[in-house]
Length: 201
Image (cartoon, rainbow, N blue to C red; front, side, top):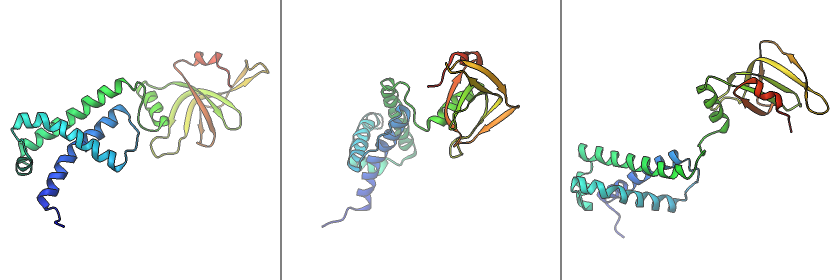
């Protein structure tokens, strides 16, 4: 059995890498979480690479494996290949994203609080594990690998009657911190008045 030469291995890598990068960009943009098997990953990478090499070949005149092996790492050719790879991933990801509205990669906690931060903060009602209910202005929250803790400014403890109507709101200082174990769920509001009609279920 004849082992493949270094040049043959290089050709295989060059054929797969553009498709791999394109697939990665596509999945990130369109929020595809699926884990591909090794066979699926290889087939999709090769398929996308072949698509990418069509305009690349038409632009550069590189049309066979020998030319790919000999000329692909010329600075101009390599940069052009990367540009086509990125464009293919962006375009394909953008098309798929239109069929997946609202889908995002990442931890929902981080996504929500990133939106809250970009909008300058929001009001929230926090339901705790021991059955208490607080409302206030969101101040700080844990993100990424941090504990999912949350603090609100000017918190008020909400007391409800037997019909779940608000009976009283007790101020609880300037700020209160809820640890990850404290929080059961969080409701967000643009204005604090929006929370007056909300009843826990």
